[in-house]
Length: 494
Image (cartoon, rainbow, N blue to C red; front, side):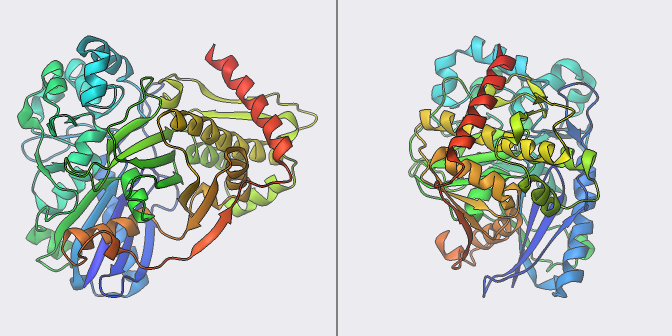
C-alpha cells in the first residue's frame, strides 16, 4: 500500500510517496520550480489563490508518479501539511470567496491587539496561550469589518490544509491543532475558543467539525478517485500545520525535543508538556500533533518571516540563474562579518518576535568601493542566522533551552555558513537529517489510517547527514559581527 503526503507551502506544493510496508520513500517532487507568487496590494498584505494550490497539487501528483512509475491505485491514505495561520473562506457551493490571507499578512495586527486588550491579557494567555494577534481568527474579523459582502457569503472557514482536505473528500472539517494555530482553541476547556468567537461576533457554525490530526477524515470523492487514479477507498488520514508536521517528520514528538526549519520562513519549535506562554507574544504556543487533555504536548514556536524569503529574493535580484550552491561558494570567499556589512532580514511582514513590528529589511554600512555581490550574499546568510540566534534567546525565556536541534537538511540549513553561525553563537549542536514535510505527512497518513500502530512505528532509522557543533575558530569574529547586527536592530526598533 502507498501513502502520499502533500505539503501546501508558500513557495511550492511538495509531494512524497512512501511504501507503508518498507517505509521507504519512493520519490518526492515539487511544483512550480520557482516560488509561487504572493499577491501584495498594500504594504504588509500577503495573499495567495487557493485554486492555485489545488491546481499545482494536481500537477505535482502527475510529476511524482511519472518520476516513480508507481501504481496510483495503490494509494490508500493521504496526509496533508500546510502553511499555518492562513484564512480560506468558501461559500455554500464550496467555491473560494476571495484569495487566502496567508501567514505573513499583517493587516489584522491592530484587530488582534485590541481583542487582547478588551478580553484581557490574563484571560487570553491562560486559555488561548497567545494574544489573538495577527492569526486566523483576527484575519476573519478583518474580512467581517472590511468586506461585509464577502463575509455574508461564508459557509465554512478553513485553514489552508482544511481546504485541500475538503477538495478531496467534500467534507468540511478541521483539527484542534489547526484551531489552536488560528487562536480558536481554548486549552483550559479543551474545546472551540468561544470567548474569541463571541467577541468577534462569529457564528459558531462557520467553524467545521473537528477531527483528530491522525484519523479517518473522510473518503475521497468518486470524482477525485477518478481524477487522481487513487484507490476509491482512499482516505485523508492526517492533517497538520507545517511546523508541527516538520517536527513530526524529524521524530520530534516528546517534551524537550526541538526541531528547526529555514524555508520561506524560519522556525525553531520546542515540545513541552506544560501550558506555557510568552507574555510579550514573541514566541507562540500551539497544540502539537499528539496533544491531548490527558497527555499535554505543546509546541512553542519561534517564527521569523524573513529567512528563505530573504535569501530567495536576493538570489532573484542578483543571480537568478545561480543555484544556492553557487551562492554559498561566493559567500565563502568573504571573511566572517562581511567586512562590516550587515543585513536585517525583516522584510516579509510584521515580525512576531519583534512584537509584531514592521521593521523592514535593511543592508547597513554598505560601501560602494568595498562591498561586492559576494559580500551581499554572505551578509544575507549571516543576517538570517543572527535572527535565529536572537529568537532563540526569546525561546529560552519561555523555558526552551536547546542543546540539540534536529533540522531538515534541504533548506537554508544546507548552507555551512548559516548552520555553523547558529551552532557557534548558541552553543547548540545542529543535526541535519534527510526528510521533508511531505514525507512527514505521508507517514502521518500511515498512522491515521492504522497502518502504523503508533507514532514511533512510523519511523525507520535515519542517518544524520551532517552535524554542526558549537566550536569554531571564527567564534570571536562571529560574536563581534552579531554585536554589530544587534546594534543595527536596536536602532531600527527605537
